[in-house]
Length: 575
Image (cartoon, rainbow, N blue to C red; front, side, top):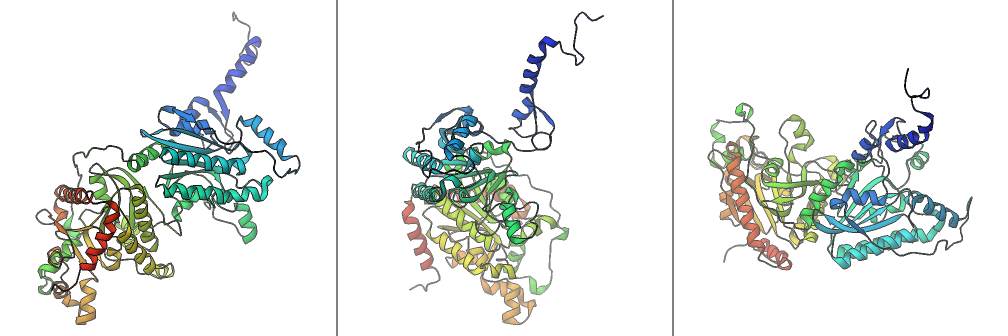
């Protein structure tokens, strides 16, 4: 016989209340899948259901704890506004709705702000609270965002906002509409102060919020699975009278369509933000030893020609520049860049995977680095479109250049392309204008800019990201207005003359150095860069570092003037 009398459910009756209380603290029910979640697992998983990955809403303090170093932050006092300027009543007075929201959430309104450190750098974070009237934006939210931005400007520190909102607050009508303009004006001041502005888009983010401050950041990070848009999905379906794709208005959809830079899991947000902040605030970073893991080279599929007409020295360089085993952009990133954060999107139409770019430390120096990626196998070559960018790629490049200028960090471009993508879609979306704007931006940015032709430098697709203060070439790279095969077909009317065309075009590094088109030649190991990645990267790393150190001695405002004079001087007859 048991010494203790228990109820049928195994708990003594007089302990039932205590047990239920403890159970409620230990377990909760997922609002998406309906399953019970052990609270400790739920908390350790950044408040994401471990069963179905449903992302629960976070309060402002929870967001601050997630993003600031060591959960250490100081609240910023935001201005209070009168509650009900329009004396609005729907099913109940607006004043009552505000009172209920304050009682339920413990917050005055739908935005909070705090100061703290991120990756050791002081920053301001504002957080919109989706539990307070769906995070809707009224006068209090507008004033809070404006005040927190002005605070960041006064402290000269980066500003981050975590956005979650159903849109403008209807109970304040046109007064809420005006917050779109007011918050945008504050963002303009933030950009004028050249302070980093990072937007974290979470679920849900809609309406006037997305059409104002939430889409004006230097860098947009979307939390994985977040729903983000202007008009709601149901509204669009009703207007169009058709079903929308399942992923429509998701974070991943916006990444594909060029609106956000990064989609990150909530558990990874801190790490991503730390890397970005370390670069944009120029935290100390030591250049470590270059350690390159070179894949085994299989030369069996590499094109070779022993024909007499293909044997000119210039055409041999063409073949070396095109060798598929040479290191590509992502290989250089892996060997020379630490804390790499890829950034995506042109903010207009889409993301282009042929032209990649992002933030990182190049041999210990904070930089913006970009270049064409060719791909290494059939799948990646198709993904990266064989290194031939569309208009979206060049618009992204121009955006990243302007961002580098704002942050006061150098630009490095690694050029390796046969040319810009030639296709119907590119023409429809303005390929010529996009290339022209990239050239224009590169010539005008007031920050050090080093371009390196690492493989093929093909036509306008190459010069779009090669208008640097210093333009270098790897020893076996080429740079030309057209491929020698095309030149031979057009001028000689015979493709077999391609080697002679290459010789006549003066497209090698030695030729272009003699013509004063480039500023230096980076040596390659014997046999070409594809034979020894380690030596190639050591040589390139040293050459770019020396160039940037030389440029750092020139006032940033003078760099565009010198850059323009350099290009003006090119091709002129020597008198």
